[in-house]
Length: 194
Image 1: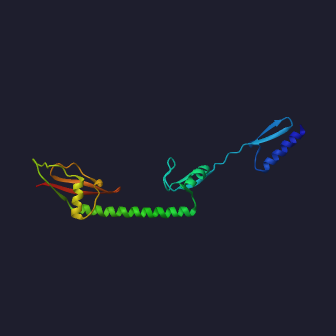
Image 2: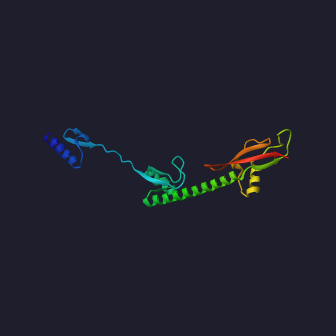
Image 3: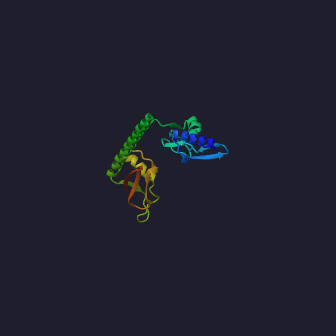
């Protein structure tokens, strides 16, 4: 029995040399033998990556993520869908984001200038065959407005960005041209009968 306590004491001193404490250990005595069992937490193995393309259920292109090492090693890396983040890659990403942001700003400024041109032109005149009272035959459509803009300003406008109220009578109306997600031009239309 005395050897068992000497063995336990030497085992505990060995454990202390590695930074362990008796609180973290459990002694299991089996007649003359002492076993020291201590639990270890499994380390999380993740990788910081950037996606090169959209991955379903994971993220969009250019997104920074933490994924499990095996998922990266066995799926994302061989298919070329992701890359491990490095400092040079982060610098490249920042430069690319700045370039894209500058391009977006340039497009927005161009749309604002075009909106200013549309709003300073005045009312576009649309001639239709008249009916009873203020009524006109047919209606004024987005395509009609696009044709008038092309004839007067020599600008091509997509009819899908033109939002018109329903025009079935003579009078003055306001149409909206959504030139950019943040820029909308208001255009006046003067409908008259001949």
